[in-house]
Length: 73
Image (cartoon, rainbow, N blue to C red; front, side):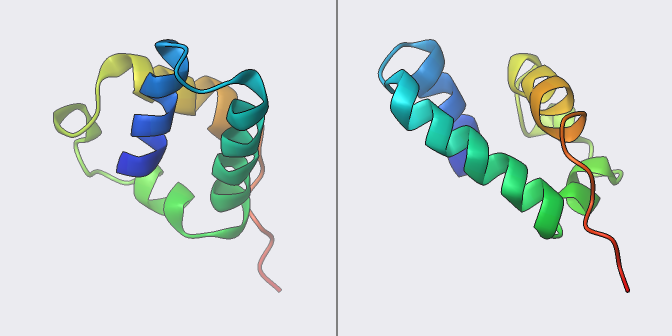
């Protein structure tokens, strides 16, 4: 998550190009769809102590809401 937060802030500062950002966004969404990271994000980890509100809002609105968790078979 720290790497994703760093990439997000670099995009905000226009250090990361739109093309690079598209790749980062795709990786984030894939991790939330196929990995355990969604479970960690939605758990009681008190994320407000770890990440700033702008990044939390971004993850909630642009990643979590636009992905669905992998279905267990």
